[in-house]
Structures are given as C-alpha cells and as structure tokens.
Amino acid sequence: MGSRIEVSFNQACHDAEGMGIRSTILSDLGYGIETARVVKIYNIGKELAPDEVQRCARELFCDPITQHYRIVGEIDIPCDWLIEIGYLPGVTDNEGTTSREGIEDLLKIKFAEKEKVYTAKRIHLTGQLDMEKLQRIARWLSNSLIQQVVCKSYADFKRDGGMGLSVPQVVLPPAYRVERLDLNVSDEELKKLSREGVLDHIDKDGREIRRGPLALDLEYMYAIRDYFNNVEKRQPTDAELEALAQTWSEHCKHTIFASQIDDVKSIY
Image 1 (tube, rainbow, N blue to C red):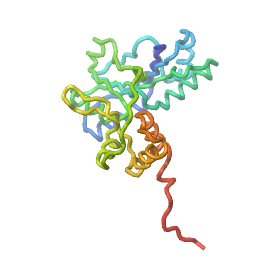
Image 2: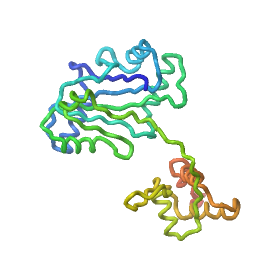
Image 3: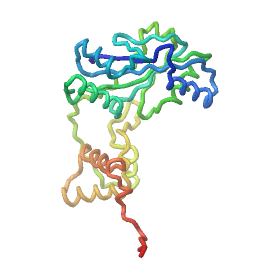
Image 4: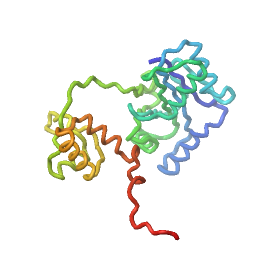
C-alpha cells in the first residue's frame, strides 16, 4: 500500500477542529464531552523511500511548531472513545488529490494513474459515553453516502493495535458479462429501471439486487429507447445505458441550465 502519515496538534496547542467537534456534540446531541482531538491521516498509495516519506510528512503535512507526525503505527492519544472517518471506495477525495499533487511537486515524481493519496481523520473523545452514543455521534459527523466509519473504545483500540479502517481502493473483479437490455417495456418498468438501476442478480432469498439508480426521467428513457430502436436497430448494452445515465446526469450535463426558457419577454 505504500506509506501512512498521521498528524495531530501538540498537547499544548489548540485543536480548532477538535474544539468545533466538541461544541457540535454538546449543542446538537447534548452529550457531555470533555475533550475532542483530531488526527489527520494520509495513506500514500505509492512506494516511496523512507527519507521521502519523512520529507513529505515534515514539509507538506505537518506544521513543525504546532503539530507532530507519525509514520509507523497510529498516533496514540489517551482517551475513552475513538471514531475514524474515511471515504468509501470510488468517492472523490479532493484533499487526497491535492496531497498527491503536493507530493509530486515536492519530490519531482509522478504518480501512476492508480496511485493515489487517501485521506481520513480519527477523532479521540473523552467523556461519559457508550457505544450507542458513540455511533450516533459518528452518524452525526459523517455522511453515510460517501464515507465509511469505524467506532471503538480506547481499550479495543489498544487491543487491536489500531482502528483497522480499510483504505478505500476500488478493486473490481473482471466482468466478462455484457447484457442487452430490452427497453420496449411499460412506463412503470422504465421508471423502475431508472430508479433502481440494472438488475445485477437475484439473491438467495429471491430479492432483486440492482446496481443503483440511473436517475433519468421518462423523457430521457424514451429518447434512448427510440435511438436504439430506430438508429442502431438493436438493444443497448448495460454499459451503454450506464454511460448515458452518467453523462446525462445533472452534475455532468447541467440539464436544468440547458433547458429552453419559456415565456421570455423583451425588456425593450
């Protein structure tokens, strides 16, 4: 996997992010938190020499006056409870991308396409909590759509030798299956396909497992169906449909901004 750099504020320095987290827990959840301290984590998915890792930690990620870093193992800040939050595989990690660019500039090297930097943060909490409250705090501080979370007591953290949060590398098995999709179905079936995605398989309990929403209105589904019926004269593949759904998404195409404006009146 490469190297792991952890950075936290020195005991004598104010941890502004930790203080903000403590304030949020107190005001929004009402839990009695005494302290909250944050450790920033940088997982570097490229093999670097030990002196290069030291240089990255020292010159890129750590303020030598207010912070300290650790390269081997995890920073151990005595506490009662810990929450570690990182991104799910495939989610854009903007801080990780910037960190990768910083390493390239500092060391005058280039990362390969699949070599990335993955960021996360670990929150060390002291206070009268239990696991149920800790998990509620974790849900409050994270976004389950894009992030993964591990919660532990300090005793379990010591016993396990760390948090054990997985590095969010995307690992996909090779897919040799290409499916043709019949779009000449009812509007309800088209809506279901758009809402839930392409059928992947049926599980052992007979439930449909689908790949996730295409998020296309019926107008778009009609357009795709008509194109393949009239121009290609065949059924689309699953990959073609997924690609169209991605490129026609509001995030990529801005269909709202591209819409025709109705009832425009001249100002003259």
